[in-house]
Every structure is written in C-alpha cells, then in structure tokens.
Length: 401
Image (cartoon, rainbow, N blue to C red; front, side, top):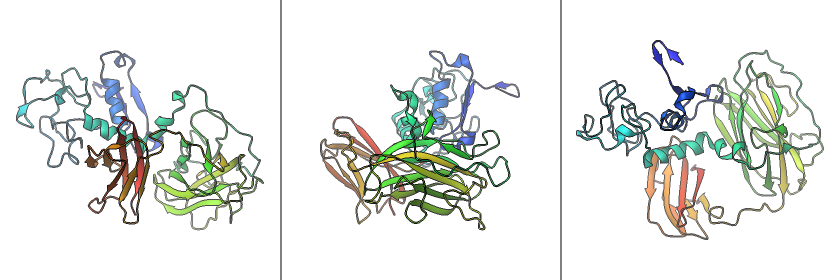
C-alpha cells in the first residue's frame, strides 16, 4: 500500500477498534522467516504501541509515568524514532543516557536492528487487551479439531422480514454477543451487508452461537452496540419453547440510552419452570433508541439488527475438574477481591485496568485463598489474572461497584 512515496509493508487496527473498521493488511513478501512485520502488526492488534510512541523524530517521548506515557509499558526504555538509522546496539540511548539494553531490537520499534523480541511487560499488556477486546480469538473456530455445529432446529417464531427505517450506512445494531459459550462478533448494519436479521443458530460457522446455561443460577449476558447513535438493547429467551416471546416473563434484558460502541451487561437466571435439555431460541435486539418507538421481540428493526441464538438450560452444568476451572474470583461485601483455589496454591495475582495497564502485582503468595483490598484502586472495572503453583492461569473481568 503506497502513501505518497512511502510503501507500507502492512498495518493492523488497534485493539478496541469498532468491528466496521477493524482490519489488517500485509504485503506477502514480509511474511517470511526472519521478517518482523507480521509480529509487529499483530502487536498493534493486541494493543501494543511503538516503543518510540510519543517521539517526534529524534525527540524523546515523555516518560514521567511509564504506565501512562510512551508505550505504557515499564520494561521498554523510552527511545526516539530510529527508522532509517544503522542498528544502535552498543551505542547510547539519548533518551536514557545509558547503553541500549535491547529496546532497539524490540519488535515494536522502528530501528535498523534485527527485531526479534517482546518484553514481559508487553506480554502482560497484550494479554489484558486480548481478554478485553479480542477474546473471540480464544474461541476461534480455527482452533477446533471438529467444525462448529451451529445447526439447531428451533421452534419457529416471528422473523423480521424488512427494515422499517431507510437503508444506509447506519453502523448500528449488534457488534458482539457473549453469553455462556456464545462469543460472537459481527458487523453492524451497513449497506454492504444489509443484514438486519440473522439466525446464528443455523448453518453458521464463524463463531459459537449456542450455549448451555444452568437452571436457577446466574449467567452474564454482554452485548456491544454499533458506534452510531444511542441504542436500545433487549433480549428474550423462549423459556417454554412455544414460539412466543412473552414480554413479562421471557424478556431477560432491556436497557435504553446506550452510547455508541458501548458494552452493556445483565445477569440472566432461568426460572424454575423453564424447559430443560432442549435448544431454546434467544433473541437479541439492538437498535436506535428512538423516543417515539416501542420495541418488542417481533418488531421490525428500524435502523438496527435482530439476532437469534440457541440456548439449552440444564439442571446441573458440568465443569472441568481441574485446578483452573475450580478457581473462584469474586468481590465480598466490603468490595474486596476474593480469590480461592481449592486445589493448587495461588502463586501470583495481577490487576489490570481495561486498557491493559498493570495496577498492582502480587508475587510469591503460595496460599489457597488471597484477598485484595481495593480501597486504594480507583477503578470500577478490572481484569484479574491468577497463576497457580502448576503454572496454570485464569483471568476474569470484574466490576467493583
């Protein structure tokens, strides 16, 4: 891709980019062994900045707070832009006054050196960004040894056959749905896809569109809306499988005045009378929040989208019997974070904010229960990463309200 006289080898959208503009590009000849371009662009896709971020040519970037300035990683020294220069290994880093210690060979640097390394701090930031913005990669169909079987014969119900508003690049509707094993990122409505309704429970292979959830126990539902205009989100589960979404008993989520690109969450607990061990239809609606409009499960979308999924309710949801699945992470009545590991001892705990910044790290814990006091943490939303004595890790998003 050429820009003026400069030929770019590739680019990648940064973690958190809205799906409509989330893309990447690489020239084929930069994907060979020894080339760092692919790893560099993948670093951007996982939220890593240039190591010279904030530099203006030969000027050094600010570095008063390594968690906020420059590349926001504390184990990469600040450096200036060395693009077009000879390899600086063995010379003095003008931004630190010391001999370069490896940052000149970092994959995220612009430098004349052979770029061949990431740091531990970059790894930690990338993991936090992965969990927050690209967790769908962890459930990508390409990781499966067997193809996805999103092919359920659900009870028929009302299906939107038209959009009541005018066609256009509205970029409104549903960008992401997470619920149990469902982890589906999709394009919002625009002229190129013209998709105002999708039944992902049938013949869909690009994501997981079905899940089992426990009876009379909570499961978190998360929905991300399009970036244009304020939205309304509603969700229903046909608990009795009669093909009718009852507004009073089967609407599991309803929220209005949601800013664009926002993720909203709700806790869904099936009632005791719900039909068990049968694939039920779940409907999610995301649309413009228009004051004069009343949305129901069967309304034609105005400028947004309607999506259907398959949900099976079971009396006892089986879990893996291993040291990771048994770890419990929750907040107590004092808003402290409680971590319990019934099997292996906890060795380390790291707290991140949603941008990937490390807020606190605890090492050498060696206990099966650990409590983090949160009174000093000025954050409502955290990512907690826990490692046990076997080297297994588990991470969880947590809100402290």
